[in-house]
Length: 368
Image (tube, rainbow, N blue to C red; front, side, top):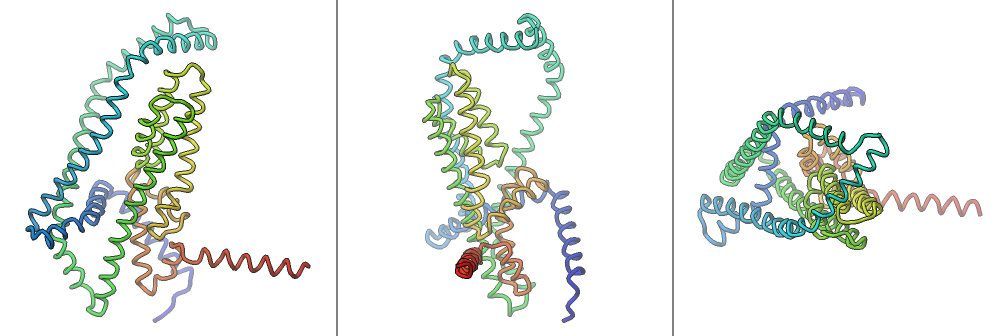
């Protein structure tokens, strides 16, 4: 087989990835629900297989039962969060007295810095509220549209999950029919490894959620911040949405700290807790824990987060990590792509560190 020069192969590869990312970008509305449904289908496959093989349940009934299981899990998460929200709401009357005091302090600070009297500040707020009310129709329309789109997307994902699980044998047979018989064993190996990557990724994300919740909750409790447990749990779940989630939970934490504490140093401490947690999560926990579980090195995980955010936004940051893990599985099982699988993975890192130590030791001996 003719071997083309490296620059020709590099140009072809660059063009391929450019077209691939362009296609993914423009097909976002179709691809995001499809990929989410595929991941959940792979995650739920052992449950469906158990119901079919051990319980002797019909595939149709097993799929419906699995969808019901999803709704029950979501309801349990919502219930756990709602109990924390209710406990937070019960404390709101205690904060109402602090709100007026804090507003007075803010008004005095603005008056000292800008010269605006409290009366002019109130007039400015009223004018802004009037502008907000005048545009409230468009805001409400956007909220309704967004809510409708979200509900429709969830419904589409549920339909995808049902049909993926119901027709999974048909999909597998199709893949085997379009491939040479000599490669069937390798294809089944790829499918099994891809499923293992998805399961490992979900478990890694769950571990990171727990670590973030513990770090935020412990840090805020050490500072004596009220609602530390609530804010820790909120930060853990919101961390599933990279960058944006931790920012929203940090903003809420700073506001609650400002209302409940007299000194602004507590607000600064709260912000530092969230900042340190975010830096550790984004640069250490997620690349190391999640990357290790999908057998992808931390640098590739970090790049997947950035590229996924550019292509599919927040959902891309969530989905691109398991997609890179599956890509590595393909590269590892196709001889021509083995070097790229090696580049994506964690293999050889310890080997390089050992060789580096040997080089340094040999140099030290030569110097002596």
